[in-house]
Every structure is written in C-alpha cells, then in structure tokens.
Image (cartoon, rainbow, N blue to C red; front, side):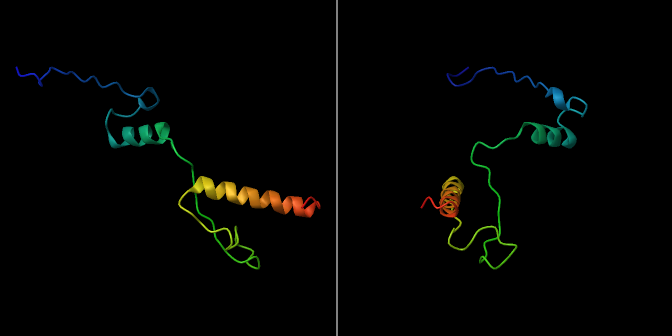
Length: 91
C-alpha cells in the first residue's frame, strides 16, 4: 500500500423527501433537484426594455441591463425613489 492509497467506503443515503422514488432513478434525481436546489447568488429574470410610450415595457432604455443584477436592482430602486420624491415635491 503506497502513501496515497486508502480504503474509502461511500454510503449512499436517500433523501427522505424523495424516498417514494426508486433510489438514483431519473424520477428520484428530478425530485432531489426540485426539492434541494437553491441559488447562492442574486436571483434574476428578464424584462422588456422599451420607451415610455410602450405599455409592455418594464424599464426605459436609460436603465440599461448589466451583468451585475444586484447593482441593476439597486439602480432601478434608487431611480424609483427619486421619482417618488419628485412626485411629492421633495426634490
């Protein structure tokens, strides 16, 4: 036995929420992924960028999409806060 070899036993334990599926079947893994996945980053989605005249637009072209979705969200929120302040005469 060399210095890098060792005896490892891996024990598989099914996820209780998916126990009604055959262990390691496609249905089991779908259940596992559906029930146990999560995001470790900022969740994101898409929205239509359009001029103010387009009723289906979500944001105007001045709020450009960026790769940092958190920064984009903060930017849109800050702009929204400014618009509210303008409406109430605070700016």
